[in-house]
Every structure is written in structure tokens, then in C-alpha cells.
Length: 217
Image 1 (cartoon, helix red, strand yellow):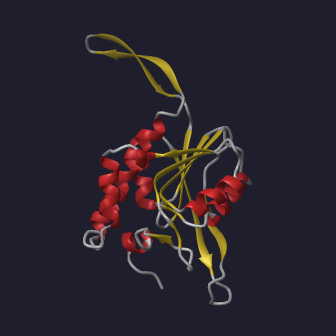
Image 2 (cartoon, helix red, strand yellow):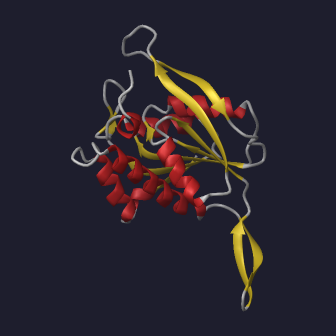
Image 3 (cartoon, one colour):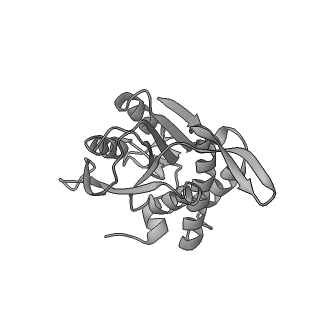
């Protein structure tokens, strides 16, 4: 797997990352969602450098200008519900992309710390021979991402696969490396220290879905 760590160079991305972590800022849910969206825009810009382009000629009022346009047929796919504001940030830049949405969540059958991943709702376009961008803010254990990936692969075979996450734990990155094809690209805005006993990222930021949309039952 090809891994791209975006935090290694100073940019406005690190400023937005600091704000979504800050307990004095993140309690403003509108600001939290907007910062996640802006992070998506920055990540989309960085990821765009790895896409394929074709030469075109643009007619202006005063002449002809040679330039390039994205050649890839893009499909953005987000994991509900936390992925929605990040999805919007990517869509602001890749506005011609098709869009897919999948639900995945931790299911605790015995009401203890053990959980498995349930993937239920799916609304996904044809992904055959297209460039798939799979988006989720948090990469903790990596189990949700792999479960969603496997479900999507039942629907078709993309030409290229890019996975974009904001905050990752080393355990999640390792799990993806073990369970996803070597040809996948993983884009990580920042890498945190570890998972705690409940498999949450430390220092992390809390529950991204709750911070964006309110507490769930």
C-alpha cells in the first residue's frame, strides 16, 4: 500500500486539524463540520496531484489556451454518518464525481468491549474501471474500512483506489496494509499515538459523528 502522510509538511491543514481537536472550539458543531469540510478540500487538492490528466484546448474570448483536465472518472464514497462533511469537502473540488454512501458501525452483541462491524445501507454507483475515493474521518482499528471495502468490491472492480482519512492510529494503518491490495493509496492527514482499551484513537478528538451531528442513542 502506498501511504501519503500529509502532516509532515507545514500547511493550513495542520491549523484546521488543531481546531477540530480543541475542546474549546469543537463544541461549536457548525464550526466543527466546516473545519472537517475544509480539511477535505485540502486533502482533495493533495490527492489530485496523483490523478491522471489529459491535454485539452480551451477557447477564451481572446484565443486558445492549452491546459489539462482530470481524465479519471471519480466515485466518492463515504461511510455514514461521520463521513458526510469530509465528503462535501472533497465534492467541492471534485464536483463532477459520482457519489456513494455506505453505513458501517461497531456492533457490540454481548454489550461488552467485543465488537464486530455491520455494513448495512448502501447507495453506490457503478465503480467498474473508475477511480474510487473511499472517505472516512477516523481510522481506528481499520475494521470498518476493510469491511466497507470488501462490500464495495462485490459490486465491481475500480481502476484505482484511494482511501482518505483525517486521523489514523498506527494499528489501523497496519490493519489496512495487511488486508487491502498493495495497489491502494492511503491518504492520512495526521497520525496519532495509539488506540486505548476501547479502541478509540488517542489523543484523537472524540466521536466525529457526534461532534458533527449530535449524540446518538
